[in-house]
Amino acid sequence: MGTETLIIENEAALAGLAARLAPLLKKGDVLTLKGNLGAGKTAFARALIRTLAGRSEEVPSPTFTLVQVYDFAPFSVYHFDLYRLEEKEVDILELGWDDARKDGVCLVEWPERLGMLLPRDRLDIEISFHKSKETAREITLWPHGTWEDRLR
Image: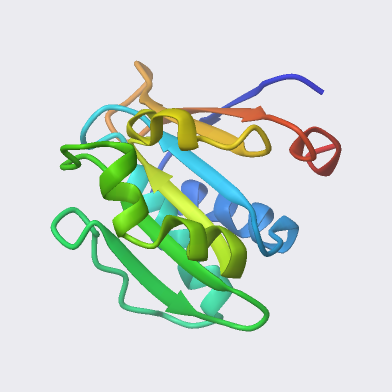
């Protein structure tokens, strides 16, 4: 399977997509969230984390903290927002990237700042504004490695 592109009408539909992807997650997974400011990267991460929590979890944007950690069974979720990173790989390692990759699932906003640390086995999710209406988004899923089989 290659890329898949979906048109999402609103934030509720974005949450529905997150709910469909949540059961596919395994310890060690990396999901990258790409898109312009305000496109819905954090909204998607928030919906995915709330689905995994099974309740209405407070999910602040990690824009200023750079990483937020949520402990669930059977894995923790590490929500990284790398927009403000200065040194790319150096800073991400200081944020606990290696432990996050071993112990949990990583959601990464602004993944291009990972540089050489971007894993080959991942699911890239690109979110962009759609011309049909203000709340609509175009979502493109780019599976790499084991994600190709999982999304079938």
